Image 1 (cartoon, rainbow, N blue to C red):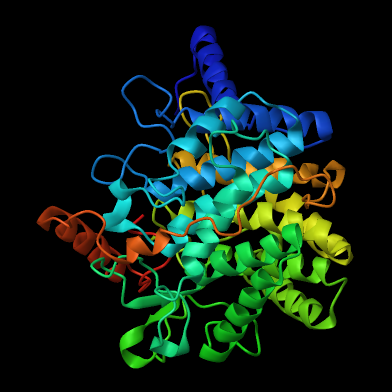
Image 2 (cartoon, rainbow, N blue to C red):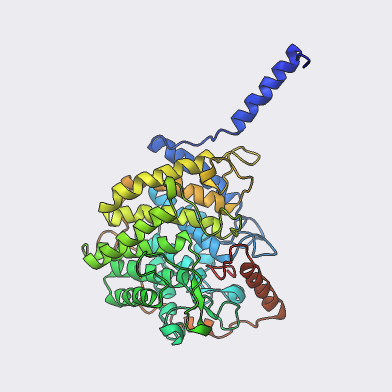
Length: 462
């Protein structure tokens, strides 16, 4: 026989249950434009609580790291600033513009091409590419221009592109294509992967649309053709695989799939579709990529990182990928409006799932990673916040202007010859120490030993 609760105990029990229910209810809403902006505003603030670069004695532009000094590699700072540039453009909230400006200019590097010497020991083409894409986003969004004595957004994007178009980056192994890492001493230099080539392709497509210079479209064509020929893009399903080592002529392909590989190419293809006035070849490619993404990364309408999420093997970096999927796919609907009915309802369903599980942390609104589960998974971080923020703010895309060009209001000044000294990174621009090699080696072994057999994805060294 159970003993009865006293009135005070019963009241306390009810209060406890009520508190638990309240703690498990997300404070965020995407019911209308005002709710989306309010939710995005709070999420942006929460994300920046992980950033210390604006504090005395800290380094502007980077999140705490790299390991073992913190969780985050250099590239993720660039990804965060690119997210906040879109946040400003889509919400109109300029609260963080000063931090964006400071960060983006502080990290340009000695040659103003986003290859700072202090990250050489883990510098990948993809890492540099994320900073270059953020600069390109600033140009396309009309983000406030830097002071005239500083490098400009378009110039910085061109510098990154030019260094990556250098003959030193495109050797004859595997018939062409970019390697994962830039300095030859880095672990991963013997690996060619989709994200490195995807960032380069993406920038080429966007620079072509912005400037009209066919040099960029020629490179975009060449990169797509190489990816297709080598088999990194499946010729039937449009699946995009991670990459392969050069030792076997890239024939032993690691077929892990990540959402950002699909998204970075799909967005670039949409830019090419747009600037070529709906060219049927680019439309077919876009259709193939979108169809595969909807079936693979957005099953049941909710974003899932299939190669690691269910197995629980996602790294800190991989946790960010779903945010890029949302941001870049929302832009696709602007550039190729015929995709709106396919893409936007799914992104809204996924965003709703994302905010539903933002119930963690001391403030009761920290976001987790496993959106499809509907419940907070107990792990917080800048990547989780960035992804959820991206999912929410991307819903504002119907009211946003499409990316600008030089002919439609873009004011950023460029330099077609920027980045002329960038091939120096192919040499060792700072001595690689035993500690550097050991650290990079440990990172490589960690990736190689992951439960789902993932090899070198984007930037385990960046």
